[in-house]
Image (tube, rainbow, N blue to C red):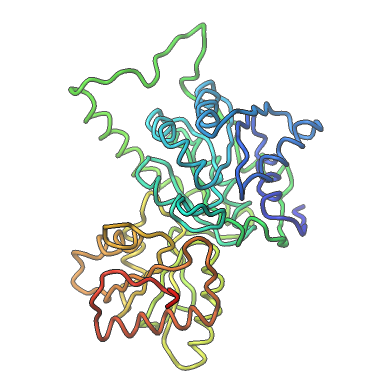
Length: 391
């Protein structure tokens, strides 16, 4: 029977990885994810987890080791944050292109400079085109659930892709929350053993990631694109089965009090829960405001986004990363693309906030929403609206 435990969210993530019965962990510590892999190291050292723990000299080496272990057919896990993800960047591309499933928890952290250990979404946005499935969570329970789901999704023979689970640094990683853990037997029924169809084997040599000349490169990327797009069906199937088994449902786009709302706020990650309280306050004040939470970042849920905002007049998109010299917010850019050909669409307002871990309180969210409404009605001179900039 499932049991509820009050625990640190990073420790809870490590316990979920243990429940997944992984074979290999290769990781390098970096704030704010260090205590995920530290706890896994303890579990391995104390004989509570039968896995190989590979202590490496950098994040680049960590991802390289994970690539090799996954190619050999091992269920593989790693975690990183911010600058660590950037150091992995080269091998992150290689892993997805070679269709090697693994799960990586990214505890979102702002990218330097200036140096910051606190969370925003700049690291997540930097890897949006690398071919990894990317899932955002809002609390510890969702992190535990989606770590388990991610192994099942990535290892499905129709997918064979790596998956990132994005967990906001500090605002979520260092919280103590009540978490429901399923029993080991329940997880084993939900998550079958991993069998790579073409594992590295000295007795049956295969070539992986070989040199590709121009006359095959485009076709290779087309095949990768089609496979990645098709993974969405498996993601939906997995979340549906998880919901039936464990009673917690997940969807690419999730709403909160958006019935009858003509003004919508779109958020990602842990700030969504604070935004819910702001929506409650504005609803009490008589404003028809709702919330859209984007859970699946890649593959991007175009149809679900269109459906979710189809009845809105104003859509305020909160980005927690800034595209320097570009369109401002990377999330808002994709939202605008999704709605470009729609005959009926809301006025989309881009607001950037929460950079470098800056808090956005309930009151701040109310102010942010009201500012978005004002911009939608009156217009503005600048394409970028940075919320909360001190004068």
